[in-house]
Structure formats: C-alpha cells, structure tokens
Amino acid sequence: MMSNAAGQNKSAEAELHAADHEAEASASAAASHPDFPFAFYFWQERQQPFQVQLHWHQDLELLVFEKGRFVLNSAQKPMELKAPAVVLVPAWCIHGMLVPHDGRAQIFTFDAWMLELKEADERLEFCLDLLLTPDLNELIWRRGDPHFADVFNAARALAERCSEVRRPGAVERLIIKSELIKILAYCSTSPYFNLKDLRQSEAVQAQQERLKNLLSYVADHFAYPIGIEDAAAACGLSKSYFSEYFTRTVGMSFSEYLLRLRLKQASQLLINTSLPIEQLMLKSGFENKSYFHKSFKQIFGCTPLQYRRARSVP
Image 1 (cartoon, rainbow, N blue to C red):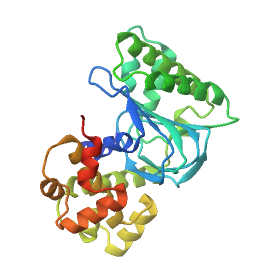
Image 2: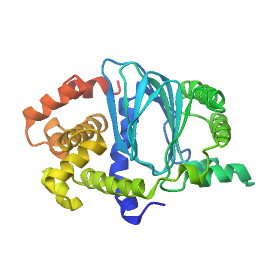
Image 3: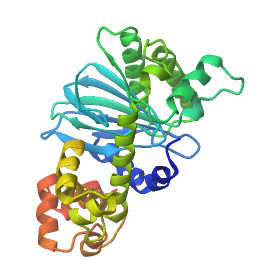
C-alpha cells in the first residue's frame, strides 16, 4: 500500500471528497453500506460544467463516459476522453476530472475484496491483487480497443439495474457482484492489464506522493485561517514555486481550490446537519458572512438557505 504518512492522512481528504460524486451527480442509487461497500452514481446534462477535485481512496472506481468530452486529471498530464470511453481507477490512484455541461456518465465505486470468492479463482485473485497494488495508472478503454464493447455494454447493463434499485436486497447484491466480476474479467483481457504497463514511473510516484501529502494537509486544515504561505511552508517550498506547482498540477490556483473545498464542506453541512448558517460557515473556514454567501451563490447558483431547503427530506 501507499506510505504510512499518506495512508494516515488520506481519511480527511477521502471523507470530504467521498461526497463529490454524490453532490455533483444527477442522482445516486445503491448507496454504500458497511455490509455491501458499493455505490453507484450517474451524471446527466446540466447548465454548467463542473470539476471533481483530485482525490483518492481504497475503493476501485469504474467510470463509464456515455456522452461528452471529459478531461481526466491524475498525477500524469490531463487527458481528454471523448465518449464513449471506460476508465478503471485502481486503489489509491489520485484522480479528478472536468465534466462538460453536456456530459453523461455512470460511476461505480466498490471495495475490491467484496468480490472475493470462498473458493479462490486464480484469474479473479490476479485482477484484485493487481488493482490493489499501489502506484498504478488508470486503465482506459476507447472505441476500437479490444473488448471495449464488452466492457462498455456490461457496465451500461449494470447501471440500468442499479438505477432501478435504491437499496439492493440479497438477490440484487449477488447480481451486482456477478456483473462486476464479469466486467473485471473483460478488463483483464487488455494487453495493458499487467504490473509492468500499469506501474507508474518513479517520477510520477514521487509526484503523486507529494500531491497526496499536500492535498491531505489542505483537507486537514481548510477550516482554519490558512493561506498559501502556510501550505508552501508545510511542503518545504517557496511561495512562488508552490503557487506555480499547485496551479500546474491541480488545474486551479490554491485560493480557488481552498474556496471550493470550503464550499463543498459547507454544502455537506447544509444537507446533513441542522446547524445555523453562521455556525456551519465558521466550521467550513469562512469568517466573512457576505463573502460566504456571495461565493456560495456563485458556485451553486442559489443561497445557502435555498440549497438546504431544496435538499431537505419532506
């Protein structure tokens, strides 16, 4: 697995960005449960494009791009993917994406070991072991690649089933597992599905580790009055180099990233708590009420109170 430092710091980053898919998704189904660590989300067309910020987690993630031009961000250079395309993100792989306003996609996240069979299957064990190996790149299928149609159609069929089931029962859970195993079986036929081709270079590994530590620091401290000087000092970098490095790697300035992180936290507190606006604003790192309201409306298109009311359970 990844280094102890990154592994220990991952929790704050992962917990905050675990809500990214659900918050930005048009809807979600088959939500994750301790006894069934699987979640499904789908994105549909909207008025504005949106950014899923860089994050990582132990779960595997399967992205099925059905329509639009997406930009996949990782420790490597941003990559434009025109639908149809499928991306399998291994455990601990840092990733994010820019979703176009006309984008349509399905997202599956799941704990790899929930697919383990009582009687070991050699091919399945190989797939799971490989995808849980640290420091791997994403595996990408485009139209024309071997078995692309098999992977894409199997994932679409699974998405259709998941969209009809909010809380899968025993039969639905078994079907979902079998469909995921089928998808992994197709994935394993790729000529690039091996450690040699998927392993990141040492330079990319070092960049991922630095980026994870940096984003973990921000995730742990965003509720406090931190600035670019604090983050640069925590990384042992000069302010000027840090600013250039952060913008180049993350795709936005540090101040914009910090603002979006704080707004994401505020949006989750609005949905999941009954805290007064003033309290949740402070818990999210905002000190100025007018700035908070202005920034929130600019990103979400409504006031915090309107956001809470629209998402409250009747």
